[in-house]
Image (tube, rainbow, N blue to C red; front, side, top):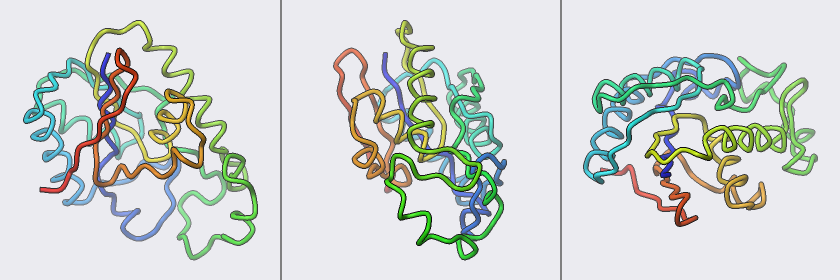
Length: 189
C-alpha cells in the first residue's frame, strides 16, 4: 500500500492567524489553486491512486473534492483524520494565546485547555493505520499538519518532536508501506 499524504489548502482563517482545530475553515483562492496543483503533481508522478480518505472538516473536504473531481476517484471521509483539537482556543487569534504557558509543557503533552495533546493525536493515527492496514491500494490521505505529522510518528515509530519537523505546506509525502520508506516531493512549481 502507498499513502500519499496531502495537507489541505490554505484557509482564510489560517491566513489571519486564527487557530482552527476542529473548526471547519474556508479555503482561499490560493488554497483552491493548490488543490488543483496537487492533482497535477500526483498525475505527473504516475501514482495512480484509487481512493481518497479525507478528514471530515470542511477545509480538508474541499481539498479532497477538488482532487477527486480531477482524478475521478472516490472519497471516503474519516473523523480520525481531523486536526488536533485546540479546545477553548479554537477560533481565537494566535495573539490571544498565552504561548509562554503553553510552551513550558513538553511537546508530546502540549495541549490547549480542553484540547488534545500530540500523544492523543498519535493514538488516533495508530487507530487509523490499523483500520487500513490490510489494504493494497494507493490512497491519498487529505488531512492536517498535526495529524499527518503524528501519522508519520506512528508509522515510523519516530519521536513526536522529530515528526513535527515535517513541512506539509510545500511537500507531499509518500509512504510505501511495503518498503517501509518515505518519499517527499516538492509542491513548488
